[in-house]
Image (cartoon, rainbow, N blue to C red; front, side):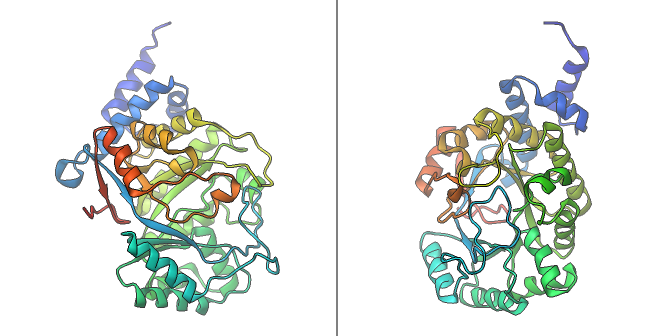
Length: 363
């Protein structure tokens, strides 16, 4: 092998914590997997060293929550989605307050502290319907955080309600919304979005929702769904846009990447495996130097790779996912309980701790 002083210098600077450029990220992406993983693990240690009274390097977290899809009716017809239905389909639904109560009661009984509430872009639900649902949940379950409505849903609300994002998000927050998930991020490159979901929010719109939410005091997560029609360079462009938004508004608590699940979808694209997943997650940890938490995507990768991901930059196993309806419709059906979470974390020598949405430890 020819000695490359410039690469050697880059690797040392990454080890020391320097921010990388897109061109440097592309070089890092092509490192041997174990080398990239070691760099990502080092950056995880740098990011978490001061957390939890200086014990951040010893702690791996998880959350107990439930994914509640309030409707499967959607009019954007994403090619990668096997969950949506159109209004009038036999299995189309809109959740009732009674059904929501039952789901939350079951979640609380299992130690849950949050619901992740997302749905299709329903063309007929009114703003008052959403405000009533939020107020109902908050009145009946005041201790449960409502982590709800992805940016693409808010763009849909803006069009249907005819109101600016600032007013919609503020009104939802006042009614009980606690934080916003990063769903619908896919790849924040419009060439890609035009191919896989041309009727959905484009990149600037997705980021605008997060900017408004952060400035109103709401925290959110950020995501990437990859392994379909995008290039590696476009994955890095996605990371750059997330990092720039975090520099500007500072409201992302975590980043989660997962791979495209192809079964029962209309998007015909080659899927990628565990090595590509670990490589991309590792690069995400290195690139997103201003986002403290990286979640392992065991829901799409399975428990074993989900555990391995904790050595590739992740410090969190995400949710036990009491209910999941979207990626499971695309053929992924991995399940995990609290005991499994704790075992996977402990086997690597970490302390397992349940957390809330803001990464405060609950035990």
